Image 1 (spheres, rainbow, N blue to C red):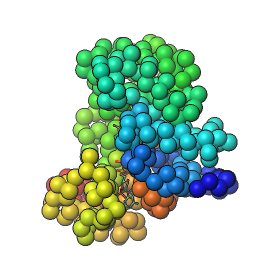
Image 2 (cartoon, rainbow, N blue to C red):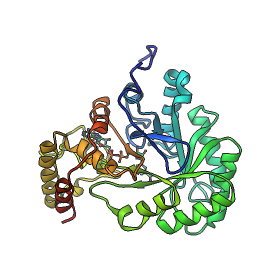
Image 3 (cartoon, helix red, strand yellow):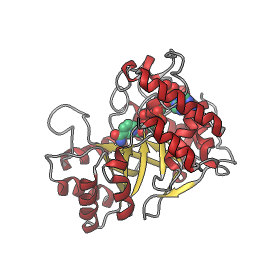
Image 4 (tube, protein in one colour):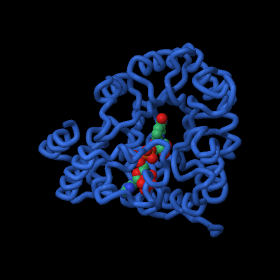
Length: 333
Ligand SMILES: NC(=O)c1ccc[n+]([C@@H]2O[C@H](COP(=O)([O-])OP(=O)(O)OC[C@H]3O[C@@H](n4cnc5c(N)ncnc54)[C@H](OP(=O)(O)O)[C@@H]3O)[C@@H](O)[C@H]2O)c1
């Protein structure tokens, strides 16, 4: 795909943009993540086609992390190449994010939350991404051993050095989120967002206080794996398609997730979605955005058509009380 890319002139006609907490930044209602399908063994033309499709539909946020691949770093390298080839004229229209906090390189300095790790990792990410700055740099997970002050001080110094515009946290529980926000306030650094898993099948942020707590402290939430990695679609209702995540990548989603109970729930949710005039994927995404507390659903995709299907939720986010009750009845039993 060596052809010249010109973004669609209609790219801002459909998407909606939501403020991230009390910050000045807005997220597209749907953002695109590079965790899967952007690694060294994946098809480069397909990655590029997904990025073009996403941006043409108003998806202005691409989410990365240092170790997305496999191999670690390769998603950032591929993103860097795509950004150079296609998106240089559009850099100021894009929010590019990266993270550090999980296993990245060998030895004691390539994991968790030390200043040593985060400071080196952002430089590596910027080099792979061929960028001067990322828009948000996240600490990827809580580190129970490193003082939170040190991790936050690392994020703040990365922001103050201009290598990131905003700081974020991911997988932080309510207690750590509140403490992190307080420390960052002292450091005069905007900690604007907590990236957490959230879907009809994973209600943890409703139960652990993060959904409510972030709103109280003015921090935004972006929901990752909103389709439960593809379970919240109709694709597994009649077996395992050979081009699905379960068939192609056994790292994080396994066939054992498809229990008879789970498949029954998926089937019932699918019927409900069709009654609403949506696909199950669309209903699952709309459900997350229905009450204004989540700024964006952070989807993954394996092909451009999925992105097209998923963004059309933006004009159908309303649910009746009866629909919400039914979704709870099906998914919480
Ligand atoms: N902060 C963290 O710790 C963390 C952790 C995980 C993820 N994330 C972020 O969240 C992003 C999304 O995570 P995810 O990939 O698990 O999200 P997801 O949206 O729950 O699942 C994405 C997968 O669902 C399938 N899919 C998507 N749209 C579909 C449609 N319309 N119809 C049928 N199937 C569809 C595709 O899989 P097939 O291959 O089956 O087609 C796609 O790869 C990641 O890329 C990453 O940026 C962050």
